[in-house]
Amino acid sequence: MPEIAPIPLSQLTTLRTGAAPARMVDATTRDELISTLHDVWATGEEWFVLGGGSNLFVGDEPFEGTVVRILTEGIERQPGTRPGFTRVKVQAGHNWDALVAFAVDAGLAGIEAMSGIPGTVGAAPVQNVGAYGQEIVQTLVEAELIDESTGDVSTVSAEELGLGFRTSVLKQHYGSLPARRAVIISVTFELAEVGQGDRPIAGEQLRSALRLESDDRVSLKWIRDHVLATRVSKGMVLDDTDADTYSAGSFFQNAVVSESFARTLPAECPRWPVAPDLDPVLVIPLDSFDGYVPKLAAKKSEVKVSSAWLIEQSGIGKSFKLPRSRASLSTKHALALTNRGNATAGELAELARFIQNRVYSEFGLVLQPEPVLVGVDL
Image 1: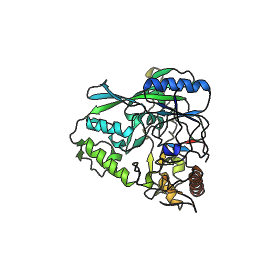
Image 2: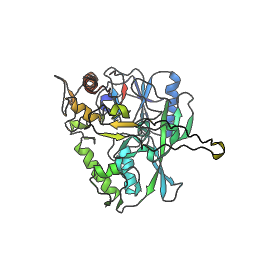
Image 3: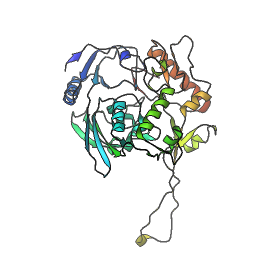
């Protein structure tokens, strides 16, 4: 397990917090990644893997364990299992936006609306990243994993990853451990072969974001260019000259609540159904039908509500910061906590807690952090 001189995590994470860990190892190939994890797990010490560092909030005290940097790269095109589709197998350390650029240049559709999302390919399925109506779950076929409990490498289907709204069985949610302690080695997607020409756009959310009519036709490149421009306008594309991008993206998840709770919120609060509310269907075999039709239980539906709206309606607007703090909300949108220059993790955590308390006081809802927290409590 060849170690390198540990680098302060403030230099490797987009929130720019964190001291140098006790140990750090770089894995640049698939075999190095597997052997490194075997070695680290054999010691029994604490560990975590680091990709692009865009979804981590690291505390101020040094991490007393090993950080494994996943630096593997590579895209392999494979035949699709359906006519008109191509598979791409991508190493976990490959830059996510570089993969999107590759797909767009190759005329492969399915991930173009996720242009500009920072981080690595291996991190994307962990929280089922998505934007403008596209999510990893829509195109992911399988992932190659290595499990901590056994050290075994296996290839699992997308269904086995339990992908949901910004979650999977691999994600470490705040206050809990992941359901499956494993590291992604590679990921395989199946993308539609649509070419470079203009075509109609099916997703209503994407059309709305890009101000397209239902009969407008645009190319993959047009979508990518306009999504990138939209994300830049919100400070969501990494830029060393823009402090609004010194963040972990949306710090709080859009809240998913019951339909009954959503009705207690002001009518102006933006909301979206998590899944289509389909009419339930009851099938009774004819040979067992006795003339009685049981009453169907009402289906409990869930609703996603805008956490940015809740924050702003709690009196916390863009650019808000606490006195003498170097942490503030983005000047461009209310969901991003930003490091305005050498802010400590403590300052960012204090701001996060203040926001949580205000939203809870106003609406009775506890906002949940989206990044993985290492050595930080909220």
